[in-house]
Image 1: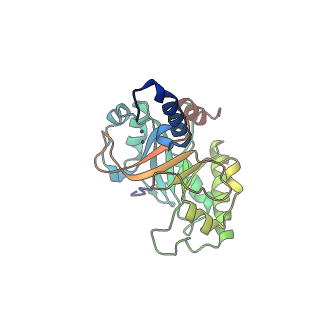
Image 2: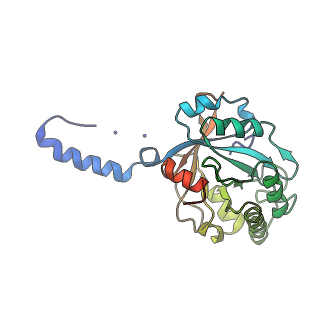
Image 3: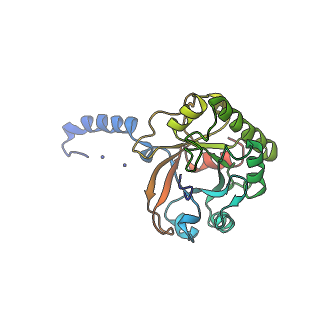
Length: 251
């Protein structure tokens, strides 16, 4: 994550049957951009000042916005982004960049909930996301935690966030990080939506046990009117009405 960061026809009537069959095949095999998906972005201070009205007019319907990291960092652009996205009609959610080696999961969940990651049933606020990815700092790929240690840390965060907000947090991760660092843990996927990070044309293999992706970050080099430079682009696996249902906890 920027933690700083979609086909051909013929004219003759005799060919219409062939065309119909080809079209049916296309629908069956098309990627998410051609299916019932909803476009979104995720942003942080590195996108600078954002014109959220332009973003919404460009077809972006949701955004995850960096709120916190660890236990002492709050993104300086979060408040403006969170309010302005809402006012532009963008369904927004906060995200927390996890630092599992510096404090307990509960501590970081509380920090998120107290600094923008709380929730309200207003049709435009998603449950917050826990951003779990390879450690960009010192301490090893999996933050120096064993698979058991990582599972315990994540569960502690998720339990605390639910206790604070009444919602199941979204989990952002890559398949490789999740499988390696949690030992292919399947526990959270019964309740917690998966936000898959895979910069490719297809989602590919999901983390162990995950039945479906809810969000998919498919590129880090997207271009959207109202945002300067590159931005992470995402899909929601459904239409806007289903996204609102998630936001309002009626899904």
